[in-house]
Length: 239
Image (cartoon, rainbow, N blue to C red):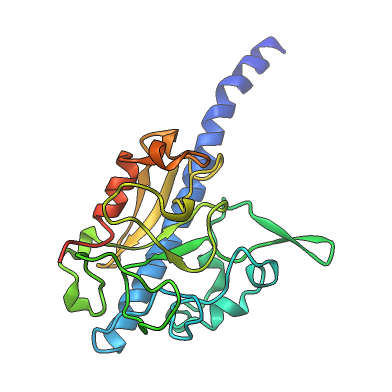
């Protein structure tokens, strides 16, 4: 019995890591499909990129706000997005490790989306709310605006504690997490890593280098974090 106990103690961490890797692979595959859907959309629209800004915007890649329970569990808001025609499977919009659930009618219901799009992707109506783009940085409206296709990210797996609409707003200077929105970071989410896809259609997994990016940090404590700077540098470019 003692030998069996020792073997079990040795095997459990190995099995746990194998499960983490399998789920991470599944999520990365989902992002590969989403990335290709994004590419196919712009190819079918003469190089025009699908819009990321989701608030009150019928032209956005996805609809729905994950902070509103009735919208967070309704896959119809995914189907209403402009990208669904090219990625007609609602399950790929949700990471298998995302534990988020909300209460609907006294029942705990799983949410339907964990991915968000780079706020610098896609043109937009200037009258839309939250439309501001920092001066001196590029907004990618057409494919010709993107300089480095393999180094510019399009969508990422967002943490369940920060996700709201489908637009991930990031400080291009890499100084602070805007509105505390962060890539997947909670315990159990890919062992401190997060999948994302790029403008050339490929998907990757980026490892967090520190837990210092976690929730609850003041603006001063967030400044100049390496993980934030890496993501910001791949989100847009100086004009």
